[in-house]
Amino acid sequence: MTTLTPVGKRIRIGATLLGLLLLVVTTLFGTDDDFPAAPFRMYSTTDKLDAPVKSLRLEGVTVDGERIVLTDSDTGLRRAEIEGQQERIKADPGLLDAVAEAYHSRNPSQARLAEVDIVVRLIQLRDGRPTGSYEDTTTVRREIA
Image (cartoon, rainbow, N blue to C red):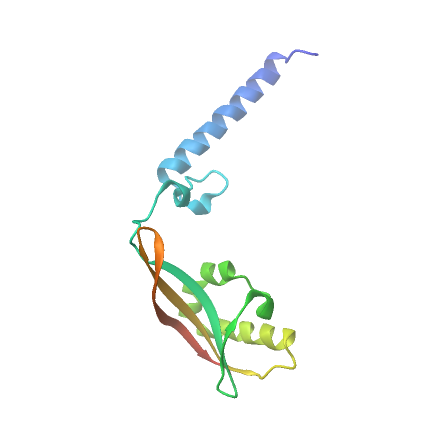
């Protein structure tokens, strides 16, 4: 086993202090987007047990008028990807055209989509458990040309 040189010790101490400084600054002033030195507020807070829970999903309406839920395997897009881009999609609903294209390329034998919607379901809770009551809201609607 070899011992560290004075320069090596200074480098390690400096790197440790820099890491700690980064952690303190992002904890006090950062957001979860500052990964990996983020405050991780998503893990440090809780919601009320009776607060509704949001669940986002994609729905499509076929040219035949049938409403279908578009799953991850239908489109190749995960729900988290849509959730992360929700504000961009609200500002430019044309981005949902890519969802329809992905659906059509993965499901060529299925009826074409005439519409793609982002639907948010508010699931009601009581004591942290679902009551069976919910409310669906379409937040973005895109008619496919």
